[in-house]
Image 1 (cartoon, helix red, strand yellow):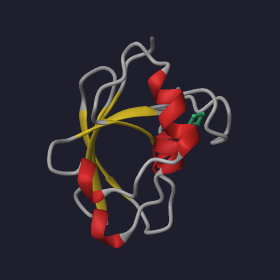
Image 2 (cartoon, rainbow, N blue to C red):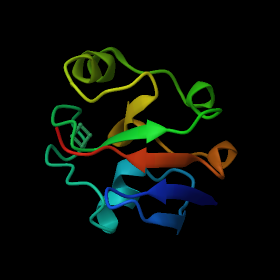
Image 3 (cartoon, rainbow, N blue to C red):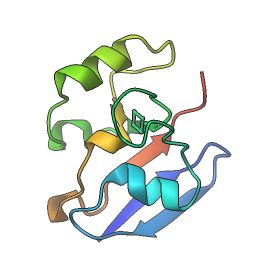
Length: 102
Ligand code: FES
């Protein structure tokens, strides 16, 4: 499966990934996010903006994710934390933009 990612420099990439991968791990492997908390849902350095049409197709936010996103000044209604998204085959073509640092 493939996902479309715009990095912080504005470069668009098509990334090959495997169902079951966490989105954060895919981005971290290419140094596109820092993921300093290691996926513990506490650093928000893995924030992405999900493209229109995709946000409702992702699993719902958990309470910790929603709380953390609430505290971010640059969060949008389409924000998600990549460490909280396990990729599945029905997410083939998922399109996200890596959020800038706060
Ligand atoms: S990796 Fe820290 S919140 Fe996602």
